[in-house]
Amino acid sequence: EAGVAQSPRYKIIEKRQSVAFWCNPISGHATLYWYQQILGQGPKLLIQFQNNGVVDDSQLPKDRFSAERLKGVDSTLKIQPAKLEDSAVYLCASRQPGQGETQYFGPGTRLLVL
Amino acid sequence: QKEVEQNSGPLSVPEGAIASLNCTYSDRGSQSFFWYRQYSGKSPELIMFIYSNGDKEDGRFTAQLNKASQYVSLLIRDSQPSDSATYLCAVKPGNYGQNFVFGPGTRLSVLP
Image (cartoon, rainbow over all chains, first blue to last red; front, side, top):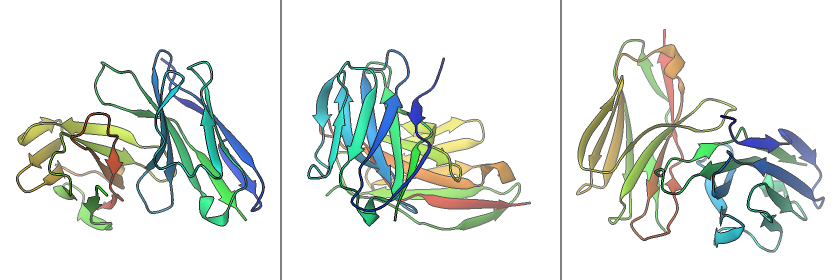
């Protein structure tokens, strides 16, 4: 079974530029999460989708971050415009409701904002 | 704000010793507790989860939960250099629909 896929793996941009990250969850997983992990910290949830609906986006900085999961499968997270403090690893995870609480993480996208 | 706290370490133990990793949480109604391992530059991977007070063993790993003290720990027996990683504690608050809160992680170094 293929795991969670993310791209790109690395991205370097200048502040005020925009960037987008892509995630393809494990096949059949209805729940998809985007986390931000700053160096030396634990992952912080940005947004949770159930199929194509948003369940929790309480910690998403909506003035600059947006995310969508239009067909309930792949998801895109966008930052526009980026700030220096957005430098972090962006992790995507998926879970199948009814099969426990385990979340499966992708390899992450490492973003550096200069 | 629900909080999960861990000692950031690094925690250094010799090979073959028992490593003890600790986590405290602020939400008394929390129901589910998870330990993830994260190698440097890699994504977190689940080691164990525990829901009930007491101990839960899986191979060299034992999770211990004490809800009265709001404390969960992970013991690693016969530590190996390959166990060197950051260990993240994650807690699911008691309210329905609330998502995981991760601690900052404890960096473990197992010395050969």
